[in-house]
Amino acid sequence: MGLRRPRRGRAARRRPPVALTATPPDGFTGEKAELYAGLVGPVDFTVPTPSVVREGLLAPYQELAWLTEPLESEVAWLREHDARLRQLVADLHRPGRTRR
Image (cartoon, rainbow, N blue to C red):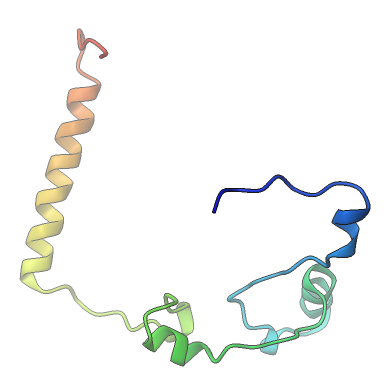
């Protein structure tokens, strides 16, 4: 299925916009709540975030993140890829390098 051009004129006005957000509005008060409602309108449907994260369909947001120390093998992987990236950037900035 290819991309379709946006509708114009009356056809575009018939369909209401859809706003998808992973920001839970539950804790918003005052001005923040008004801004949220003004941007996306009333909430029509809420997906239970923990179950969607558990299924692997959504990355956890800050309140669900569990930060841990990386394993030594992960640290080694990060160091290796950091060194490779730094070498690539140095090579790309090397004087006299010709572009392909």
